[in-house]
Image (cartoon, rainbow, N blue to C red; front, side):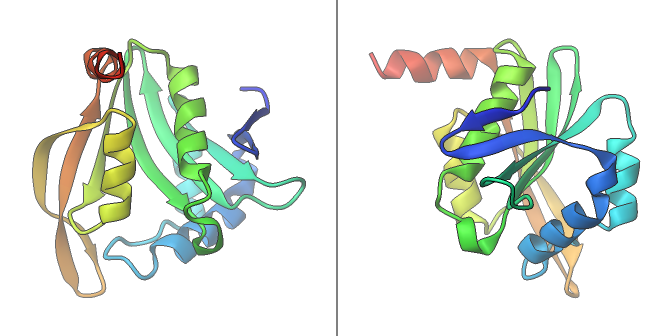
Length: 168
């Protein structure tokens, strides 16, 4: 994937060699949440899989401030994680990452993801780009001595078409 500029951000595929920085970013974003942050080893392993890739967003030549990791196979995709550093939240970077991912994956790709039931900002973001709730995973996230349910969301070509029709 080539370097892309979207909504004022530089977005490009993150190599497995960036695993240390990606783990630091993920830890910064997820440490206060019920989810367990991924280690550098986890990032190297995940990014070493042939169907998995990461998109990183940054301003200018700075290190990445946001990250989207996904698995893509034929017309099915799963967003494994999406995180934005606290200092740049509400800047449009998450939507920029999703925009680039959707262009890369194609309009006929069904995309699924899980999100913690209490993560209102993420839920609002996903619903704003055409995701609909399709399920619940009880006790899915574990961390900080508690378990939290996850909502399962999906985005299909049909959902995107309905969303665009609603704008007419």
